[in-house]
Amino acid sequence: MGDRRRDLLAGVACVNLATLTWAGNHILGRWLRGSAGPFTISAIRFAIAGAVFALLLAQRPAADRRLGRDAWRLVLMALVGVVLFSPTLYAGLRLTTAVNTALINGLGPVITVALAAAVLGERLTLARVGGAVVGLAGVAAIVLGGRRGAGSGHLAGDLVVLAAVLCWSVYSLLGRATMHSRSPLAATALPILLALPVLAVGAWWEVGRIPLRLTPPAAVALLGIGLLPSLVGFLAWNAGVQRLGSGGAMVFLNTLPLYGAVLGALVLHEPLGLHHLLGGLLIVAGSLWAVRSPV
Image 1 (tube, rainbow, N blue to C red):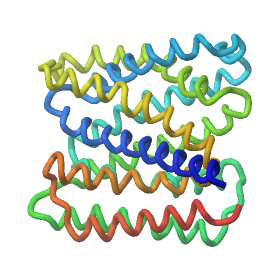
Image 2: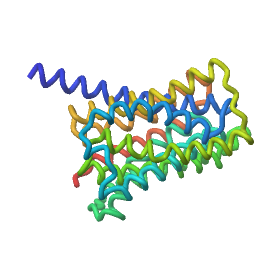
Image 3: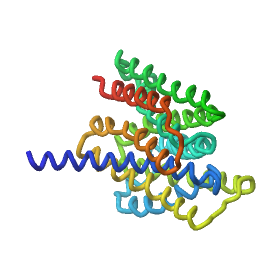
């Protein structure tokens, strides 16, 4: 019993570490908006993470490293989950706050559940529909509350972030199918490595329009964004899933918007209003309702 309790506590700590690093990605992405463009941040981030993942992937069996019959799915994961998701997220962070971004990201589990029902034919229960409605009400509270603020003008950024969350949900479904035949490490590393040339071209095009200002603080932030959310977050999440199971780990995914909102307020001194509190509570409640409902 004691060993089981320690294992559960270790699992909870791991998944919370993962969501904390992912929330930190929003903070660093928002802070870097004056130093680099979305494609440049993404290219540097995944070049760093890709180098480490390539070393880890070298330890896997040859079959896990090769593009096989699921090559088309890996290419789609690269396009949707890396090439589209990452620059779109950082583009949104140029227009809206890290607080809004973190809270809207909390809608991810609801969107994933809805897509799984629409695309994979998974059962769409009343609880899942209710969770989606509650979560969308939370996003509406954040977006509309921000528009009523004193000239905040974050509507475009909020919608861009919502598009990024949709990309991530599609990537998650593709990843779930891919991991039936591959390890989680390979399913993460291969799309990153496939996406790197496209990100590099995008960064090369973008630097002429949004110059890279590589000050020492910006270099440290880019290193952090390459290591923390992509590497530490991934490894910690998988360690947590191993101990808690996927269902148990998914419940703690709802700590991401909470960590992000608090960090945005504390680190970036962003406003945290009543509409954020109400929207965040609705998003977390809707996600918990949808994810924890019986299949």
